[in-house]
Image 1: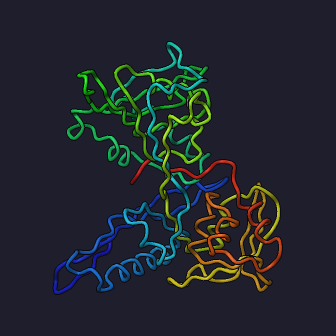
Image 2: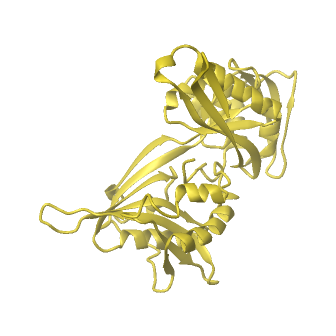
Image 3: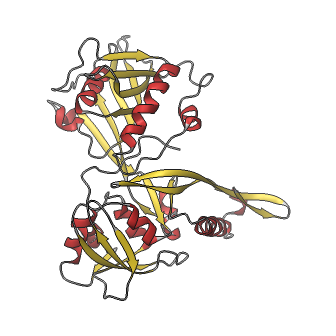
Amino acid sequence: MLGAFRDGHIVGGTAGIPFALTVPGGELPVRGVASVWVSPAWRGRGFLRDLMDAQLQRFVEDEVAAAVLIASEPGIHRRFGFGVASLTARVRIASSARPSLAEAEAGEIELGQRDTGVHASIEIYERVRQTVPGMLDRGDGWWEYSYPTAGIDDDEPTLFALHHGADGEHDGYAAYSVQAGWSDEGRPDNTLRMHELVAETPRAYGALWSYCLGLSLCGRVVAENRPVDEPLLHMLAAPEAMRLSVVDGLHVRILDVPAALSARRYSARGEVVLSVRDDAGGWAGGTWLVEGDPEAAACTSTRRSPDLALDAGALACVYLGGSSFDALHWAGLVEELRPGGIRRADELFSWPRAPWLPWDY
């Protein structure tokens, strides 16, 4: 933790938390930025800039390749070299819009309370985490943070629907609570608030959604932190019943370009030279040769002429495969210096699974 002080009083602070970030085809140790604040009485005095610069410098000294954060005010972090590396969806759907596939069958779904549900979910989450870019490892303390053992949600207790696979082992979970409500006619009109739904297989995914949408007396399901490529949309007979809005998800700040880009894998074999500008600290600045491969990767400093020019924030946006160089080119954030450079870069950096983090820290 770092603090900003004036006349012996603390006026701001920030914290850094170690995580393991799943990247395409691999994993990268990172630091999570959290608890960033400046007293309203001391805003506009440069304390935020000093705190973030000091914190990122500390990460660099600790040989951390990248920092991540979930933004409460998304607009302020790009000045520090962060970029939106993943998006997250908010879903609202009427319970009458049942999936047309993978209806839950008797015996597949087991309903559990907090302790049973968390115990099973920990193992499922960790297996899924290894395959989905953007997910963070999650120790026991974070599960307690997400689902406290007692006290704060007694009126709407969290329940866990656990799915049994063909081998009898759990392979998916949905954590949810039910908010009581009544219609104008005096009939039950509850809302199921889905906290998480994580599944290893399409069968588990479809069965859990079918279970949640089929609960009696619930008129709708509301879910946050859903993947932007939510498969449920394609499973509904009436997809127009699903309302999906997209917001920023995980922000990434690359500090050590060779370490970060060598840690991930690439969808094709090839190379691209990136000229990266870093006006916020300079740690990511330079000209970098990325040699990509589905099985291995390397990134080194080079004197070769670059194919593309971009800043550190734009590099963060494409790092997990959540955005394309082409989209950033149209947004004015990537300059193509050599014909075909954008196409080659997108062939390398694209990834089949959209990055996703199903919880907030």
